[in-house]
Image (cartoon, rainbow, N blue to C red; front, top):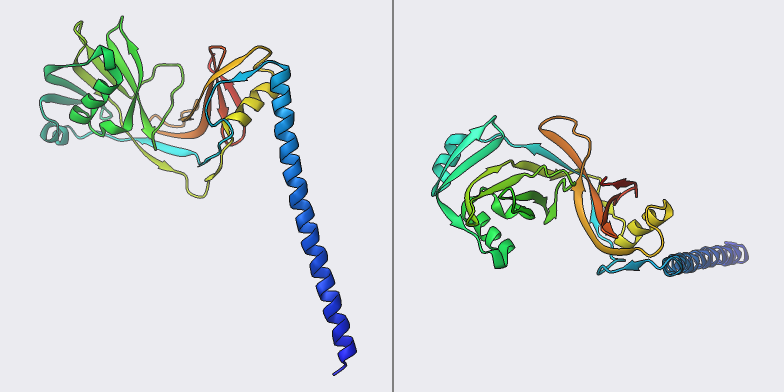
Length: 260
């Protein structure tokens, strides 16, 4: 065996390995510097334009994916046998309308909590709905279905999934309900844009200008296109309120939609 030749091969191998590891370390260091400079640059732009962000965890990132929702047909006999102290009926297979045997009072001083208690007691899968709007003039409360605690399809069009019908004494007399079977699209999970990155998209496309205050950033699932009356695909989006104007930013691709 030619030990001199073998020794040379070992030296060259370790030299190449050291060069490769050194390059990897250099790239990692550069990426870290680039991220730092990008974040610093964004903060400078926000400061220069006097844009205030009054939301918590603005830089936090989470994983998510688009979801699909299929409207579930209701079987009237099932609800007649399972829902107590009310008389349910099914309209067009997909809407459950139910009248309570006696009105159920809500507490105005703690309306959301009393609505949640009502949902737990009277409504099928009531824990999957979240309070959205109290219309005192027309005497109803609108709620959206949720997925993993995040509202689905909360655009400003009042197409609620659950509506509680009230009387003048703030009592629920009846309700109408739609329910979707929801699932996450397999293989599509990825890191979503942070609220701060969503704000950056608004800034880059000049949706927000100087002296703007960002007061809310809420992640939900939205779709403006309905492929079928009973089937929809919803994308994770940030619902951002800037100076009382509402914007929707796709949390995957950063596409911006205005509520107006």
